[in-house]
Length: 145
Image (tube, rainbow, N blue to C red):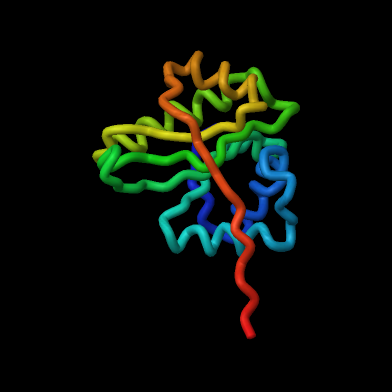
């Protein structure tokens, strides 16, 4: 059960059933296109596969900003519901820390929903701390004439 980065269309598509548990608004038909588009800004998709398929997925990117310097941002981290509590999420998070370290990142960041109490407990068990609040607003795109 090595952790790999999904590079081929087949590997990315095979990650969809796991990602759907975290991002149910995504449809299977558009998933590959969305991942390929995000890759243009540095997004990568790591996964853990067992003999019966992929059980955990993490979407992430290396970023640099004024607040944190060079850091790894985890966009998505999810384990298949039927495979939870078996250490897959912990292994992925540990792998992400190692990946960040090897690429000279000084921090790892992620956001999780206020309603995701189990995820918050998991991150705190893994040694992460809450450092702020994330705010968002929706923007309705202007119609082109």
